[in-house]
Length: 255
Image (cartoon, rainbow, N blue to C red; front, top):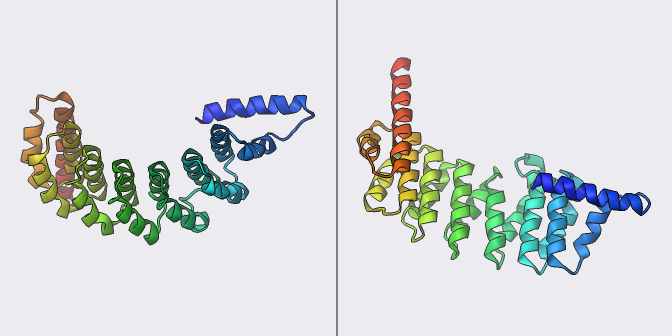
């Protein structure tokens, strides 16, 4: 996307030069008021490539756009213009992202959840826990993934709940998030989920998570999975078993 943005900026700059050297950024800003929603959306994505904090207020105004695609693009652009990983700038955009997480359209809620995953703030964790129960499966999956990125143990209960979600992609993201948390207390739930799980992608995610958690009690399960007829599951289980064995060896050496 960045390469495309650079190309478009070059084209705009070339056109501006023919018109007397118009500022490319100014040309893009004018497109925020274009009647065509696609042009407004593309303008926002281009503005995000400038990594320019002063653009943040202009981008935030687009959160009131009637088109959900434009609102979602505004969230993406906002994350670049005012990096949400930065504690000082995050305080300015968190209220906007929290509001977007309540948007009427799932596309916008999904984008907001993804952005909040990079915000280290208790408000983000609480909002994402609520979003993990959204009526839309894609939003739930995005919220669960974001909670894994947060790495906050406060999300453990919510992630364990999502292991039983009716949507397999949500279950997969929940397993991976639990692996990122490396929570020993998640071991029993993951093993239980594995017994009843039929979706192969979810099984692979669980195998990966077991390796990340590193509890020796998962070794026998991983050995069984390493003999699976599914080549991807068996490969994932073997790698997880290596990780588990390596961690056990490291611990014994420290004693």
